[in-house]
Image (cartoon, rainbow, N blue to C red; front, top):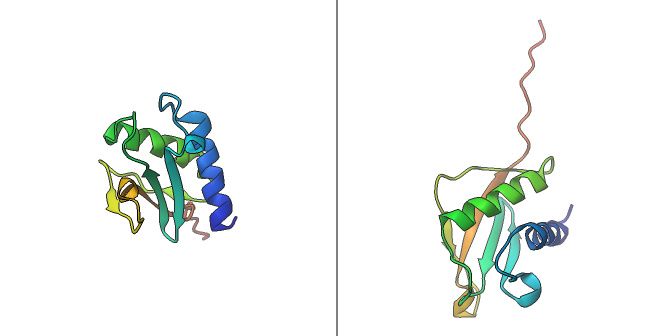
Length: 110
């Protein structure tokens, strides 16, 4: 899957599963940007939802299961907040979700 397809897929999953009091990507409340080693959830502030650890973990739960078996998200203990290079100040921060390939069980043949 290309980066654009992955971003659309994650956005669609979040629109359907994430309860943000009616706010979705269709209302320009957030966007998803795919990077080489993870993806960004970029909220558009001000927003009616709270940007906190609870939101970060809910997005993680949705995206982690949705992306399997393409990618495995790396679990963070708290919010991984990064600065973006967006022009609009309302989009200058994002949740970062690092990922890796799918871990495989090591099998040793004797």
